[in-house]
Length: 205
Image (tube, rainbow, N blue to C red; front, top):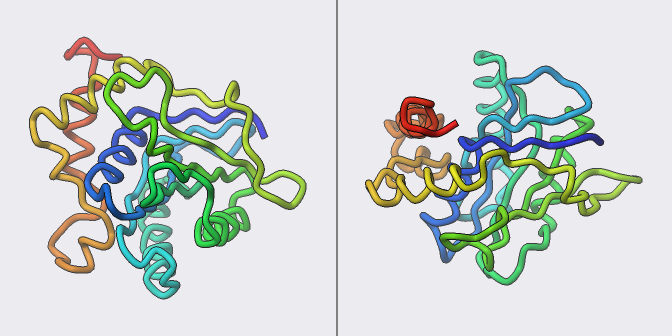
């Protein structure tokens, strides 16, 4: 597999999701609006659950709905992310491996991204992520030099701005949507806010 690029939008939403439920494991799907090719460009993510991660019916329902939405918005599911409840544990769980495997069946360059809770603090010099790729019939650690998160300092600044303004509360995962179907799991409001902060007009690239 070639390089993987992670956008500011995708990273910010993953970070907010894990921060919103610090005592729970959380998971979600990684999306790309780029055509299939050697490199994977993760342009967005859909936060899924913050409870009962291993409950198959809810996961299947979420996967189906996200898949339909992706087909309507010219996106595709290219990976899976998870943050474990135990901050010192960034190893893929059986649930993570199972869902990643399901995604791999449809996308042969799918990635599995684990959030490293021990590195989730302001000013961290490197993205707090551990990425895996499917290699020789198993999920293996991906070479960190092939993982790109451009403008890392600017991305950290945007995440800090979201917290300072209280906008992290805008994030809705699929779990919260099931509790209140008026909540938008596609996170259009939050997406717009993040894109506004990313725009060159605000001095960010």
